[in-house]
Length: 205
Image (tube, rainbow, N blue to C red):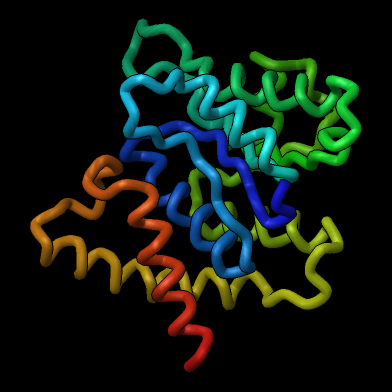
């Protein structure tokens, strides 16, 4: 298990995309490795891919901010809560290596989760109010609290760098004929690679 792996459980939609890019960015900036379920093999069962990522990641981020239906009168979106439950199950499975797993649970509003998932009321849930800066701050502070990084920059510096990257990324993706606001325009692997290259150069300046 690579100590730098961070499993990400979140919704995949255009509204959430700026937050997801913020999650990717702060993790890469702090030298962590985002792990997210993106499969190109039609023969691979998605839930098994997710389980493998959880098993290889000592840290997990679970975002529950999109449990609401996508449209009125539709069913609730339960994938994120379901995946979080699997991760909790692994943590408490009795496997010694997994007992040390650490989670960050994100929501969009304080205490809203109590209306649909009261069992996690004893956990420290962070609300981001759909703001990429608050997502970056929550993750930066969580990483700092793990004691794995003796000295890391304040979130304002990371968020400022994220804004610079966003301008670069939007211009580059648009010039290639893609919509930078469309979550399916570029694979997550490509986004992570582009970010890692940009951050590497940014830190050398």
